[in-house]
Length: 149
Length: 149
DNA sequence: TTATTAATGAGAAAGATTATCATTTGCAAT
DNA sequence: ATTGCAAATGATAATCTTTCTCATTAATAA
Image (cartoon, rainbow over all chains, first blue to last red; front, side, top):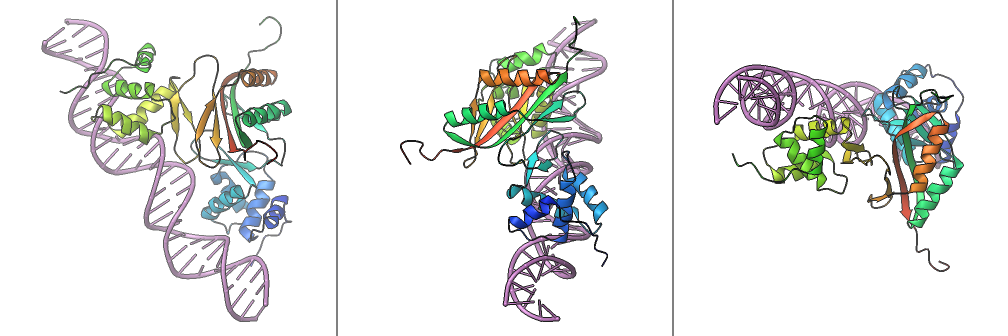
């Protein structure tokens, strides 16, 4: 049998809480996701999952990632490059945003309550309730902002 | 020969200004784009272009759209649904943003100087110069905000 | 443990985009 | 206007990501 043993991750618990069947594969993928603080694509998630349990197929990673997204456990992101990337969804309040370094492509996360409030306001004044915000700003590192340049 | 006759569009001029060879197909695609105020995908652009000049292939639309994006003439957008969508790039100031109706998928454009300023500020304080902002908020139409519901 | 129903694996299929290559075209110089 | 040549195009093959199919396997409740 050789089932790999590791504790249930926070995401695995969430999975159960939502009434989703907690299969071995989902447990593994949830574990891997809870362990990640970056924005892996499906291919990368598959690589990490296989390290934990080789008895997993990429089709299942695709399926699970979609399931988790539909259930608000994951959020899909598009940073260009043709493939979707995923990260654990934020809680009820305090979305976070992404700054992408124009030169290196590096993704830097940030939060900003003032921005949260402003967006909420703008959307409300247009007659809508805010559901999700997808914001990424592309920036270029400033050339030594100190002194007189 | 049967070359369709229509004036050079603003985008065609831009194309020339950037030193790009202005072929018949590019002229047609530029014309179609200048004429569009929505966010067509490549398939849709192809449809519109063929109406103007049937001697055009979808491969060329893909190529042109990529070329224009690389030269800052177009901006690629991702509204979900698996295909890239395009719109004419904003000028130097005043990006615009998108509100997506969660139920209908309709895209509503808006501008907001306060948001422009705040984003600029946030990015600057992180040590970057803002290059592009990609913001779309998903919202759900409020259930009759009048009275006491 | 058994039944039931859903999930999985492996690969085929679909959908979007890019590459290939022979042919055509824009454009600069004649 | 003609010529020459590099670059663009058309048609289609190839690639890449994601979804689907279906026989097999596994999770949950009784």
